[in-house]
Length: 315
Image (cartoon, rainbow, N blue to C red; front, side):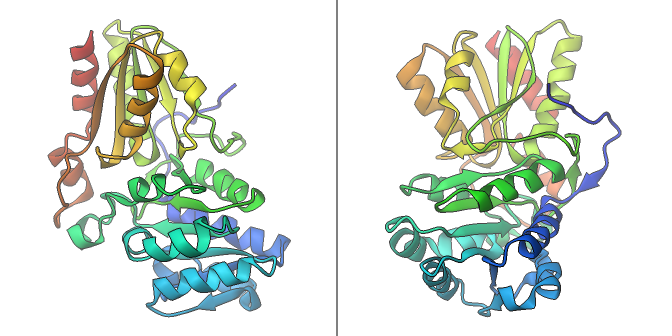
C-alpha cells in the first residue's frame, strides 16, 4: 500500500535528499566516494565532505576529468558519485561517460542537481532540459528522478547498491514532500498513486505533485484517473505502461524537453505494445529563459490546468 502525506505539504528540494543520503551512505560504506566539480555547496555534498573527508575528491570546474577519475576509481572497487549541475553532468560529460563509463559498464553514479526548469532565474544556460534524454540513449545507463525528498533518498540508496552506471537527477528548488518517509521504491518499477479507468497520467520528478493535484480535480468532475509516478525512465516499467494501454488514453508530464524524455519513452512502449493515444506535456522543444520557476512551467504548459484540460481532451 502506498502511503502519501496529506496537504499542505512540507517543501524540500530533492538535492537536499541526495546530500543527506550520500552522507549516511559514506559512513556506512568506505567504498562510497564523491567526486565534486567545485560546487559542493549547491549540490549539497559538503556534509559528505565534512563527515568522511578521505572519501571526497574535488576536481575543480572540470567535469570531464571527474568522469575519467570516477571511472578509474570504480575499477579499484570504489563506488564513485560524480556531483555537479545537470546541464554539465550530461552535456559536458557525455562523451567521457559514454566511452569511459557506459561502454565498459563501470560502477559510476552521476548525481546531478538543478535538473529541468528549477534553476529558473539562473537562465536557460543552467536549465537542463535535455539531460535525461541524452543519457537515455546510451547503453547500460539507468536514468532516475525521484518525485520528492523521501523518494529521492530511497532511490539514491538503491543506486548505490546496484552495479552499473546510473544518472540521478535532482531539483534545485523545493518541491512538495508527497511520500511518507517509510515508503519503499524499486528502480525500474513505477509507483501507482491512484487507480482509475477513464484516463492515465504518467509523471516523474517535480511534476508528480502537479499530476496528483490534477488527478484530484479530474476526479471531482467524475473522471476516473490512474496516476503513475514513473521515477525511472530507463529502464522504463514496460509492464505498467502496457497495463495502461487497456485504458487507451495517456497523458505524460515532465520537466524536460518533450523530445526523448519520459513522454518519448512511454510512446515507444505504446507504439510497440498497444493502440493508445498519448499526449505529452513538458518543455516545448525550446530553451529556457531567466524567470521564476512557476512562470517557466506556465510558459511550457506544465501546469495543473493544462494537465486537466489535456486529460479531458482525450475523453
